[in-house]
Each structure stands twice: as C-alpha cells, then as structure tokens.
Image (cartoon, rainbow, N blue to C red):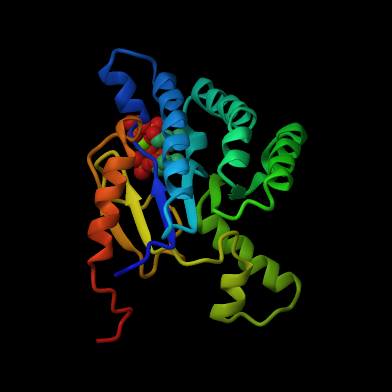
Length: 224
Ligand code: IPE
Ligand code: IPE
Ligand code: MG
C-alpha cells in the first residue's frame, strides 16, 4: 500500500464557485481559505500524510486585476492571524515556498513569526506556496549554486530548491488538467489526480476517497 507522505494540492476554482452564486470572486477565496483549515486538520490527523503543500498564489497570479491581488494579500495576512490556533492545536508546522522578498517587511515578519511559533509542530509540515512558480524556484536554486560555486548535481540542485522533498500525490481541483508551474521538479514521479470539484466545495471525504485510490496504485519509478 502506498503512503501519501507528501500531498500537494493546486487549489483551483474559487472564482468560478463565487460566480456560480452571483457573488464576487473574493467570496470564493474566503470560502477557499476555510477549506484549507478543514483539509489541514484532516491531513494533520492522517497517519500517512507527513507533508501538505498548497498552491495559494503563483508567480503568474500578479496578472490578475489589482483589486483581486490586493484582496489575496490581505486574506493571507488575516489567515496568518486566524489560523495560528489551528496550527498550534493540531501540532502543525507552518512553512512557505516561493519568493517572499517582494512582500512588505511587515508581512514577511508575520510569516517568519508564525514559522518560529510553530517550529515544533510534528504532525504535519504545512507549506503554503506564495509568489511561487517552479521556473522561478529552479532558477533561484541554480543561481544560489552558482554564487557559492557549488557543482550542479541532481542532489545539490534538489537541496537548493525551496521544496527539496518529492511529491507523492499531486491533486488539482477545479477540473483543469494542467500543472500551472507548480512543483515541476518535485512532481517527477508524483501520481496525478484531477477532480472537477471546485476548491470551496472540496471535502475531507473526497480527499479520503482519493487517498484510497492512491494507496492501490503500483508505483514503479522506472523499474519493473
Ligand atoms: C484558485 O482559484 C485560487 C488562486 C489562484 C488564488 P481561482 O481564483 O483561480 O479560481 P478560478 O479558477 O478562476 O475559478
Ligand atoms: C493555479 O491556478 C494557481 C493557484 C491555484 C494558486 P490558476 O487559476 O492561476 O491557473 P491557470 O491560470 O488556470 O492555469
Ligand atoms: Mg484558476
């Protein structure tokens, strides 16, 4: 039976969820943030999941209207405050991937504080991908190695990435079958799952069913 040690999710469909209800896209993002809590608590209490990595804002999402981008930045800030207790209560360790250097010093400090406060969480490593793109991540990793004159090998490049751990199960909600620049290196042997369910409608029950399917897959990694 496969263990889904590292589960990664492209949380897509917030805008369509809101539109279908005649609401502003921002309502979908708000509901989506609540679903993050449900799924994170489920993952923290699931014996086979050690890491959960969630795609929250891509390097391409800056193309969206300023009002939506501003809302997402505020939502992240609110999330960091409101979810502190969820992290501490469930022994979840908070982490991020992506280039945070573009954010305000205040937001960066808040992120760093939550990482420090949750550093001994041992039930789940919970990583939010924010201003994350795999091309940017791999490029920054290569630049780091170049700057320190470290020879480029698969191992050194992997270690220099924001996320050095391979993904076992990669799931995308919202019905589209693409990776949208998420964890391209780490997903080399991930099992891919796509569901039409929009992220605000996603439930722990559906995740449970996906994990059961995943458990039965024969993973060969190029062998026989
Ligand atoms: C995913 O939902 C959340 C972010 C990208 C921030 P979308 O906002 O992409 O929702 P859809 O795909 O337009 O429905
Ligand atoms: C991927 O969703 C990014 C996140 C979920 C954060 P998008 O909605 O940005 O992806 P595309 O544009 O449909 O590929
Ligand atoms: Mg989308």
